[in-house]
Length: 172
Image 1 (cartoon, rainbow, N blue to C red):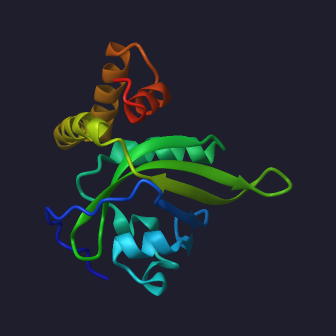
Image 2: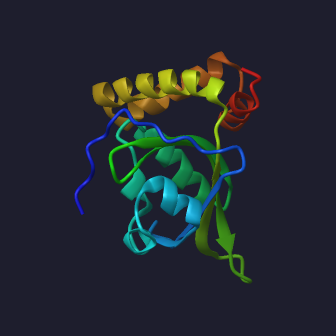
């Protein structure tokens, strides 16, 4: 399946929309709810078994996904602002919470993500930060964007978790 060409058409989540999906340990979609199907423009059949990256927008810095995978592989949850790509090239922003689902032995069984409507005011900052991270990534790879993010957090005297939660809550 070829990747759609991104357009400027944004789809908005409603206040009570919750996108839910599960992936296997390799990131392949094993469950997706109706809202995910509707907003992405893909059918359930087109999503199931595919890498979750099927909806990855090229405006997303790689460092965000590195943080996500590093965290959930250590059985820690993470919140992130994510811009996703629709089948028709449109996009939608979400505030995502991703966690590992553990079996009765404490081993990771799969990954679970719940996404909701992001704080629209926060997206102004997030888009600017992500643009800067992408510039750094093009200049010096993921290491450069990681260093930029670390410096940004240090300048705000905060952690990644506190920073994104504060943005979503309208505190920054």
